[in-house]
Image (cartoon, rainbow, N blue to C red):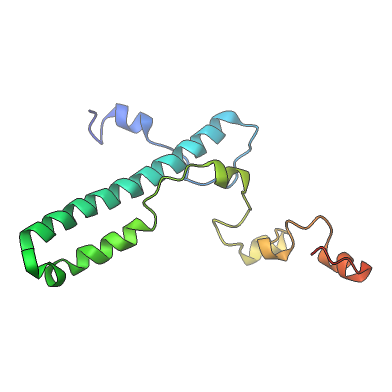
Length: 138
């Protein structure tokens, strides 16, 4: 197994963030790199929860009847890790990607015309036009 500093390890390390921000879906290598980064991030969270669970089991065994007092911090840490421990894949994020969802839309993006999801991104017609025409689909 390669060490963290080796060239083989650095060659496999993802170079893109685990998100679909600024990814052109027609650029297959960048799309696959984003998918790989998302899966890797999910697996890291899953394995972290697994390590905490193993430490919690050791603590329960070691402390015996005092485990409620002695293992409380590990138990809380495990419950927090469980929230993100499931490997969900990338397909839902890829098909339902909304710009600005992973990264909040800042004031500079609003000035540039980037809309927030609640501002009618999914609407087929602008909300003002629909209200003026009496359309109740929105």
